[in-house]
Length: 320
Image 1: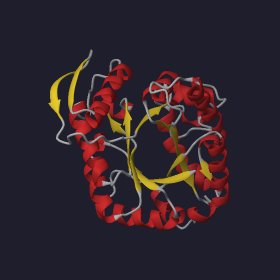
Image 2 (image 1 turned 60 degrees about the horizontal axis):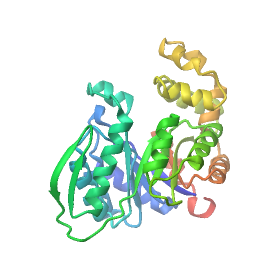
Image 3 (image 1 turned 90 degrees about the horizontal axis):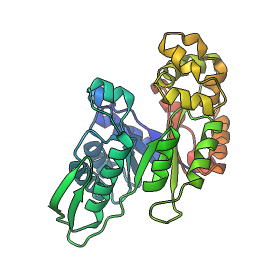
């Protein structure tokens, strides 16, 4: 199990450098950064390019780039340049489009998975072919030439997946999947069963599973619940996403609709505790080991900013 520190996109660059170097010292494998377009946060590719020059021996994961933010050719060019600047220690997390971003930017999100399938094909072609020609339902690319000559880049692409169709798509065309934040152990069991039963498009068995997790190292359980609950309320309110996470975790999926109506008391402590890790580092390591047994290879660990110092004081190199 390799831990990755989740850094918020609104963080200033110099602070990101300090956090990334502290994460390396604590034994983290890498850092992740979201593409938070609705808040005009840091550009993930520019930021990772800069961080890679000042934070050595870390892997950088975009979690995740919105497929609608760039034309696939522009996306591929940026990702490949970032991969080279990071010395190959880069994973492109590429998503179908978060609900909050789609709403904020009034983007047309029809058939997102079919569109994402074409985006991945074009990006892969850019990394392996001398010339890209593509014609699909969403994109047409004519004679786009690579300046890399015969150089081939094995750019790893991880696709976020929450609902069953998205999980199957990630398992089919991706090099890995990024499982949702607020994923309970029961939900991860459900997702990994789908992954195991889905044939890979490339015919290879190698596939990475990354899982987002929120860790609150609060000594007081009530304090931890107070901090985590607003995030759970917002996330579980997303249509389709909330219902899936609740149902596959053993809770009533109708709670998601009730949250959208303002009935926040339906988010019980039992729900939050199933989806968030609280307490001392031993509880975190127990959760990491449980995920590892299910096949999770990367744990993307996020926390409340007030607890970052506590998380970075944990010796992941020794105990992880």
